[in-house]
Image 1 (cartoon, rainbow, N blue to C red):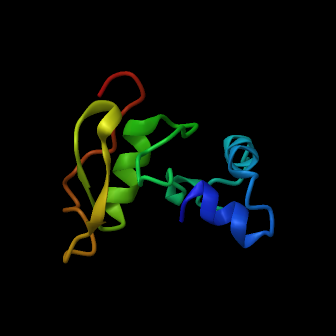
Image 2: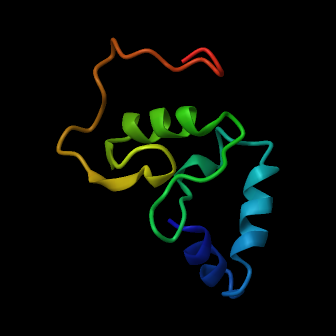
Image 3: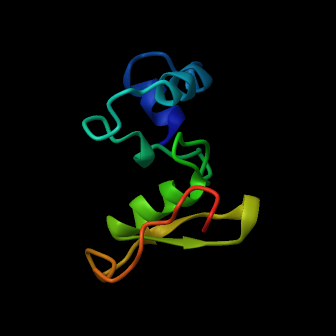
Length: 95
């Protein structure tokens, strides 16, 4: 789901930035998984836990990525449903 797609879904197609602000203030990240919302070009945008954490969560859900740095974006779903259990959750600022 993209910020624009979510704005359209609630009947406010010009409110993509407002959707981003609401997602940024989400106090229930485990119940309302805001890490699944991405930019219209499928690029990763802000997340309270950091973009590295957002990517890690999406990878655990089977998403693959392409590009580097600011060009990093979702490439599609992988055939595997989950990353191996041995993968470590990234630590904020410590990689």
